[in-house]
Length: 411
Image 1 (cartoon, helix red, strand yellow):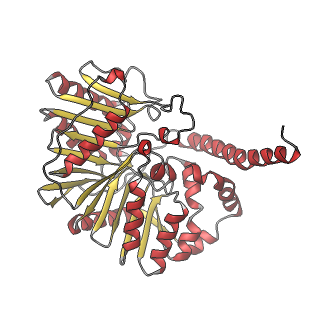
Image 2 (spheres, rainbow, N blue to C red):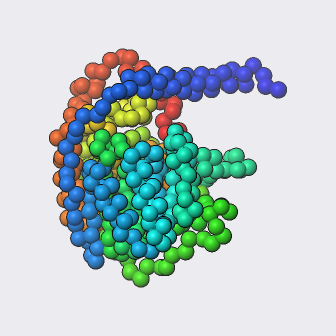
Image 3 (cartoon, helix red, strand yellow):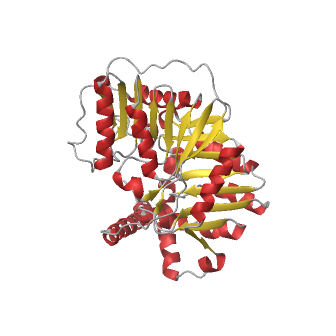
C-alpha cells in the first residue's frame, strides 16, 4: 500500500501529464471546427525536374498531380511486379484510381503487393478495403504487439510511401495517396531509376517479410540481389522491430559537417535536445541555417510543440520561415550544395525513433542545386519569423507552450 507521499506523487504525475493532454484534446477539437469548409490557398511549385546520377536518374516532384500521373503511368506499364506502400490510402477519387490501376495490373498477370497502415486509415470505408484475390494486400495492424505489451519495438506505425515497378522505377517521398494531396498540399517526392531502385525494393520486401501472417501466404517475398549499386544514392530505413534508426544519425552527421548552409523543410518539427544542439551549433559557427515549417499545419498541437523551440533556435542565429496558406508536408533538407535527403521522416520522436520510415540520401551537386531552387520557390510563399516578433508574443501563447511542453517526448 502506498503512503501519503506516493499518493501525492501519483496526483502530481496525473496533473503533469493530464492537464497537457486535456489542453491538447480541446485545442484539436477547436481547430477541427475552425477548419470546416476552409480550402487552402494556391501555392507556387516547380515542375518535375530530372537529374542524372550515374546510370540512373532522379526526378523531383513538388505538386501531387504531377506525381500521381507518373505513378499511375508506371503501374500501367508494369510487366512483372508492383510493390506499393502508403501510410494513408484514401478511399476517394485518387485512391480509387490507384486501386483500379493495381487491380487491372494484377488481372493481366503482374504480381502486385500492397501495404497500408491500419491506424492511419481507420476512417477509410471498409468497402474500399476489399481487394480482389489476385492482389496481395497487407493492412499493417492498428495493434501489433500481441501479448508483448511492453515491447516498444512493436508499436511503430508504417509511415513509409513507396512504389516500385519491376526493376525499372521507384518512387519515394512525403506524398500519401488521396485527392486533397494532389492539389492542396505542398510535398516532395522523387522518382528513381537505375541501381537505386534495388534498395527501395529491398526495403519493401524486408517490411513485408517481417510482418507477414498466414493470410499473406507461406512464401516470403524473395528478391534477387542487385548486381550493382550507386554510391551517391543511399536508402536509410528506420526499422523499430530491429531497433534500427539510421535516419536520425544521417541527419546529425550531415549537420555536423555543414560549413556553408543548411536548408530544411519539415511538416512537423519537434526535435530532441541533440538535434537542437546540432542546429544551434552550426548556426553559431557561421553556417546559414534556414528552417521552413508550416505557419499552420494539419496538427495544431504539433505546431505549438514546435514553437517551444523557436526562441532557442532564433537566439543562436537559425532563421525560421513560416509557409503561408497551405500545408507544406515535405521532409527534405539540402546542405552545402552537395548533400540532400528526401523521404518520409519528420524531425520528431515518432519519426526519428518510433515509426517505420524511409529517407533517400543523395550526394550530388546537381540534385542539391535543384533542391535549393525548390527551397527558394517555397520561401516566396513564406514569411520569416523575426526574433523581435517572437519575443513580443502574448503571455497566453507563452503559457500554452509551457503547458504543452511535457508532451514533447511523446511526439
